[in-house]
Length: 69
Image (cartoon, rainbow, N blue to C red; front, side):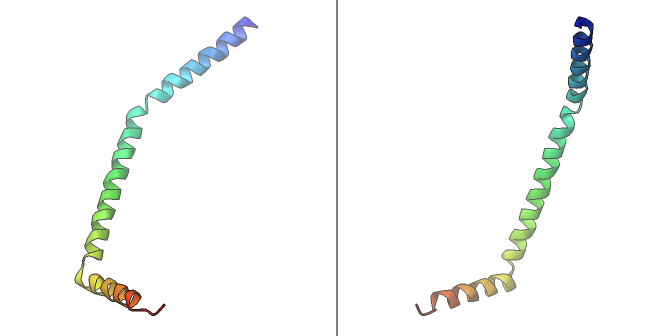
């Protein structure tokens, strides 16, 4: 029984050590996600601040403020 427990423990330790080898890959995935999110935010900012969209947003706000209650 002792040998079986020891073998399972050894297998578990080997799996944990193997999983630690990919630690850098997780960091790079986070970095790529942040870069993609920032790129999307910049694109969205450019669209929202364009003259056509700004004009439409102002019209919506003016219409909402002038509505009767």
